[in-house]
Length: 123
Image (cartoon, rainbow, N blue to C red; front, side, top):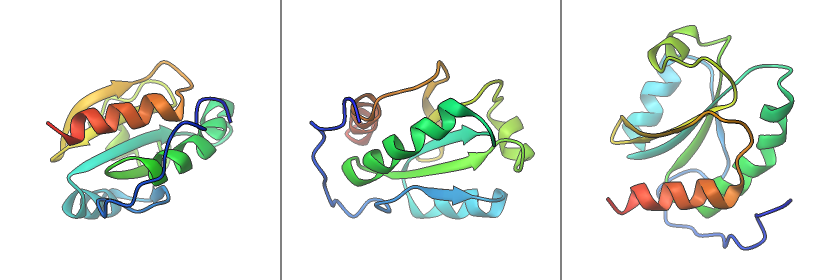
């Protein structure tokens, strides 16, 4: 996996070490109640770029502060509408429940995502 070899695993206790799947708004509310920093990825079934992001998100979950979650945009339309998602993958960083960053321009490396989460963890 390109760009992930330099990322060191940390266990800071701030999030699960694997991405979690959000199946409904209740899952989303629970995630926000438990974690101050969240990377949320909107995907759809059959999206090739989304599928290629799966191992990257696993690396990010093990390496960065906060929690990493995925949501199928077609299965949780309320959340998709709340964030105004127009394309997938869309990655949204939430700090204390507020959107602080968004990436919606395709594939992202683990290093980019870890750096983004670390930046917002210290603010």
